[in-house]
Amino acid sequence: MQYDTKVIPDKHALPLSVYEQFKHNAALSKYQWTLIDAKARVRFKAWSYPLSSFFGLKFLELVTVWLRAHGVEGKINVQMDRGGEFYSGSKRKQCEWNTHFKRYNVFVYDTKGAKWKQNLVERSHRTDDEVFYIPRGEYMKNKTDFLIEGQHWIINYNNRESTGIGMHGVSPKQKLEELKVRQAKEITHFPAIILEHFLTPLHTLFNLKTERQEKEKSQNVLCYYLWVT
Image (tube, rainbow, N blue to C red):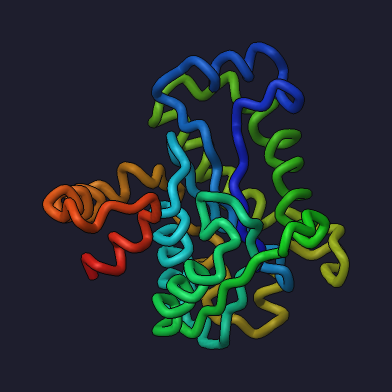
């Protein structure tokens, strides 16, 4: 899988009216999180207002649990860039992530700065702009509108014909079915979520714990998470 984030209010990609709406409407998320499977092109998406490594770790965990709950049992390799919302290219932090995800049989690594290696997820972000944000952005006035549109887009993308290498014009859902994945439909109907809202109880507990640990101050949110769990 390839893992990346996208800044939604991008003035170079969106019409001015849609850009201004996402830039200045506090109800609308500013970042998109995307995980895409390299074999079947299935995408899992979420949104947030800020970026954080806490969200980076937890969204990957949510997708992993979703796949395991729907019968996907093989090892999952996840590639990402060296962004601060992940583990910033730090070997120590990478080790911490892999220690955490070992229980799920997941291995994470980065591109070592080679952006072309993220071609699948980057290309899918262009599709987001062309097919989702540009034509549908004007209809997203509040959180409810945004989540409804986002849910439709997740399902639509996973059922669209793909021209990618090895896809032969079938959709991600159909590709999963060709690969004998039994719960293909359920997997491709991943729920649209805003990470702050979904993770509020855990994030609140997380903050309360860390505030009492003056000697444990760190810029690495993952260290706190590992300590809490």
